[in-house]
Structures are given as C-alpha cells and as structure tokens.
Length: 224
Image 1: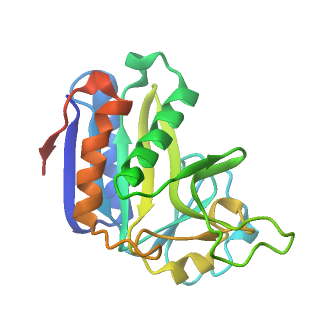
Image 2: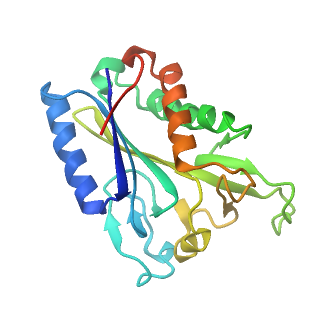
C-alpha cells in the first residue's frame, strides 16, 4: 500500500524537497513504501528545468526555489493543495507518458467530485477550466483558466514532485510569474469558481479517486 502523509500548517519548501529526496532513495532501495504527501507551502515560486528568466516578472516578491522538476515557473502558497507523489515506475512499466496521464486523470476525477469538468489541452501542461463567462482572449478565442499544475521528476524511475490544485489561494500571487510559460490564459481556483470547497473536502476527494488511476496500490490508508 501507498503511505498517505498529511501536514498541517505551512511546510517550508527546502524541508519538503529534502524529505522527497530521501524518500525516493529509500523507495528505490526497497527500504520504504511508496508515498503521497498532502501539504501547503508558504508563498513561493519554483523554477523547473525549462524556466525562462523573463517569465519571472517580480523576482523580489517571494522566494524562488530551483525545483529540478520538469516544467517552468509555478507558484505555491496557502490555499493551494500540493500532493507530492513518490511512486515507483519500475513496477509500472517505466511509462512516463502514462504516469503523467494518470496524474492528470486523478486531478480530473477529483474535480468531478464537485461537479467541475477539468480538461487537458495539447501543448499546455496542467488542468484547465473553460471560461465562457469571461471576456474572450484578444484573438477571439475562448479564455481558459488553469486550476491545477503538474510537474514531476524521476530518479531511478521513482517519481517525486507531483500536482497542485488551487482551492482558495490568493490568485494575485500568480501575477509575479508567467505560470508555466503561458500568458494568454488565466488562473482560477475552486472558490473563485463559486464552489464552497475546503481543503479537507479536496483531500477526501483525492483519497476517494486515487485507486481508480492507481489500482495496484489498493485502498489508501492515512498516516500523519
């Protein structure tokens, strides 16, 4: 079974990164089980391996951390659920594309629990919400807002980093970056969309929907 860890309060990013680094090595060595860690961070920006310096629009606003995961700049902060996913792809055919698709599907399934339809977009990482209620983009295309980000890294075919879903963060904090290098669309959250969802509500949905995408891991069991 996968271990589920849940942290109250705000976890400093270096602490989370150190834990993931250690746990990934232990999973690869066969001395620790796979794990999912649900947490929140204080306000910060992370830079993935494809981050472009000009996409950091306000470098002095919050701390910037080199994440060494795939992707570009992302924001983490209070009101955003981060799920760090430490799973062994050696047991799952070493299929990175399928693994990312399963993470996307897990997010989509969780959002469906609240009557919300999250969607994938070719060439755009993350999960998107069409916004016909908003003014269209300058080119006339439908505006779509990002509600969840996905970024992973593998070491010895064990994953770390993972997903983040906006519950009720301060959306103005995203203004300091071009999120994931995409400037023509916005960012939203469950509460911004008018859904009175709490962090506990989302956590319960994440647990309920996990096994559908990762059936070999069985029913989740909680551990603090």
